[in-house]
Length: 72
Image 1 (cartoon, rainbow, N blue to C red):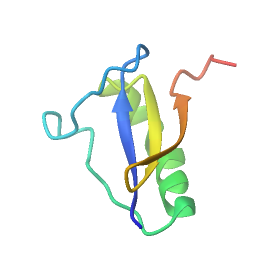
Image 2: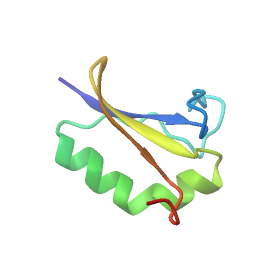
Image 3: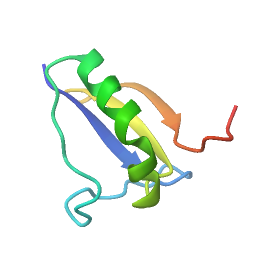
């Protein structure tokens, strides 16, 4: 199963990756690869308009996390 990130506003509204080249529609072969990629790119994603992300395994939601570096 492929892993991916869904980009969202803080309210949970989906920010379409296709409409913004800075929010790539990446697919990953493992959870670790997806999380490592996010660790390297979260600041750029935040600058491009994503306020939180949701990790998906196929269509299944794994978790949602804020991209706000000041959030607890």
